[in-house]
Length: 417
Image (cartoon, rainbow, N blue to C red; front, side, top):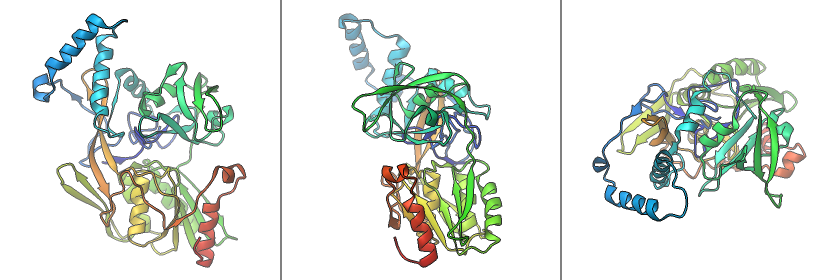
């Protein structure tokens, strides 16, 4: 079972969830949003729980062990200061090797952070109620979504804030997984975030009391004087397709003139769920193409059993639509099944496999890339909507949603935004 979703390095981690958990190393699950984004398991299937990788000799790895020992010897003899422990030096060396790949989604999680995540896999998750993502080029970890009514919102956290420290620990050099592990914690406990905000001259601290955050997988309503059905999907966790079918069956009873599927800020999730949700809207055909580094190709297809294959469709997307959400949006766009309105998506077109190392740390390795049915690669570029409609900070402040308005108007009148 493939997991495509929130995970580290731009995957998106939700710092505290109580529903929709998919698997193990959580912040939200194996596909992880706090995904989710989402750990992402390989397409060949199997459990997300990784097997330990045994140590190998330095010679088999091809590393210049002589040079590394020479550098270490010089540091021990000459450096003016206390040399870190051997474990800390090993962690630093591994992190350096992984970072040299230049792939923000391939990452090393130090043992202490990996343990924090393993301790929190019961299926009930607690935290502050915010979604995180890795910024490119060492820009740190940014909050991209704060959930309504969450501890984060009540404390004054805003989307766009960059986390500099958690409880006094500098996190500017940590990845999303590690930061999320520090932020999460038991309900009622407190965490202090040092944040940097675009319109603030200097960093500031906010103390947040953690809580249990319950986020519905779907929400639905009727718009446009009852003529337009609307459904939003938070992620592609285990119950996504079942809930979508239940909600849509009720919405479609009234024969709406059109349907809006809102995938904005959807960090991804299970590939199997993406296929099942795609089945609702698409006829039989290739849904996604996966390729490994050797060029091996695998196609996954939808069937022809969907309940919403004919209703006029608009899909809302933005920069927070990632991974499995992009798979679905890309397939709908490729087949001309509906129009995409909003902003260019995140651009997460890779699959990661989590592996537990002999020291208890975790290595998450990009093993595949995926492509749309028409073989479009979106990794690093995202999917451009058919109609680009921005949603500004001023719009949010004024409680306006021009993207949703544009979708309703398009379905009612056929006029392009």
